[in-house]
Length: 190
Ligand code: K1U
Ligand code: ZN
Image (cartoon, rainbow, N blue to C red; front, side, top):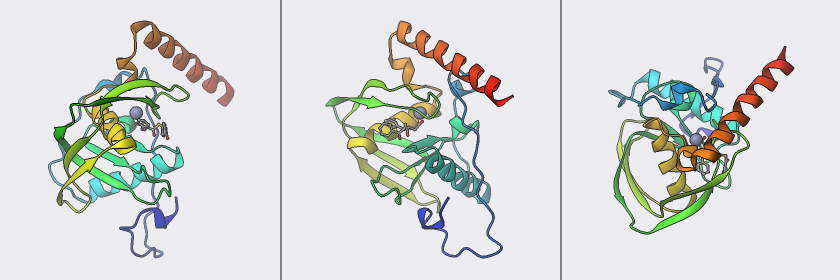
């Protein structure tokens, strides 16, 4: 994890605390269906969580990560949909304040469902109000991948994984594939 990816870290001294990579829950882990609680206060504990989530997201080559995926059930999301991977967005207690009536189908992936990509319909544009890492209220009008990603991540915060938009047959196949993948990885790791 390189410090330039976290612009709020203005100086890295010998006192800097190393960021941790957090384990990502894998579908069909039942903890992915937990409903997250609002963050009461953006304090050092939340800022530490945000930094660890950003490090985890960049390391996994994701464009987003919800706290639910790292087994923390508070309304925290990190994202970076920039091509340059140097524009982190920290979204705490998000609310959709408006959504376009036009919908778009996009190919989605999920760090909790590795190797699986499928088509999901989402609002083409959304405006999201949230609190940032400094505790300031912000509003962002999103389209393209940012709009898709924020809707995907907000689903995680209410315990919904994108495969739940797919047919029961597809979902069951994905569930079996993920269980086999996890078993195989455990055997190889022994
Ligand atoms: O929530 C997550 O697990 C992160 C997820 C976010 C996301 C990506 C694309 C569409 C919807 C949601 C990912 O980062 S998946 C991996 C990825 O980097 C990616 C996949 C498809 C398109 C662009 C990026
Ligand atoms: Zn996801």
